[in-house]
Length: 361
Image (cartoon, rainbow, N blue to C red; front, side):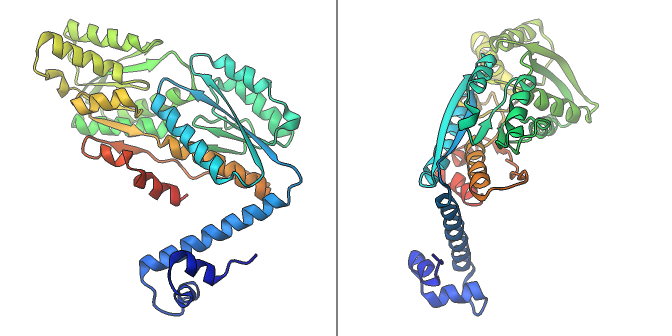
């Protein structure tokens, strides 16, 4: 059924003449109203086309999403909310969504879950890969059978995947390095922690950090210290403080709340009056412990990754690919970073902020 101008007018509570003037560029319409008319017109047409495509299908389509539950519970919950938003939006389009999750501490569980999928009953896969070399062949086998695969958060560029949805982790590391350079005025000593986990995200993140920070010759790195358990960062930080090693900043590709806790505890135990707040710390993940130390002044900023948007976009893009029968890989919109400070932290708890981003996708 054709979308009529009267439908748009009724939905917005304006006259059909106003809608006609905006769509036909035949008269004056104020900018805010014109924008609403075009947004609704595009949205209705988009939904109508997708629904028509879904009606043409003889059977429901099965989309499986294999994601990872990391140490960052806030990231996971927000990404799951993005999944849910897309699932609800496309619930009437004849799609069956299923999910499996593996812990980042048990990456072989993900291989087991992926290997157990019935390819004959699978129409599409969204995967947040942990073990790159083990997951990539599985993805390649699926794509060879015509099953589109979207990688989420971490990419497998050589697997034949349909598209990648996520932030540029290398760029995220560079952003953190530039923030450190500005906070330190281009000089100082940074205690750097890397990780024993050889996943793509922390590896790319740390590589970006090193490449960018090397452009500042008056900034020296202490380390990098490679750690397995996050608690090791706490112990190492306490050791550096007790040894009197001069430090101006601390960076890690994973959970910065552990070094921040070490600074807080040291200040508390030795009653230094919060002296260690002067050290500069920039977190790469937004979660509850990190926000706690941001509020206390032991973390200066958080580089946020918009996990809700990542989860939503992956589901939306795959839905479009199946219902529109795309033949070529689609370029997903880049998921940009947010810089969270004490002054603007409440903005990122405001649904209206993410609604603005959400409506632009």
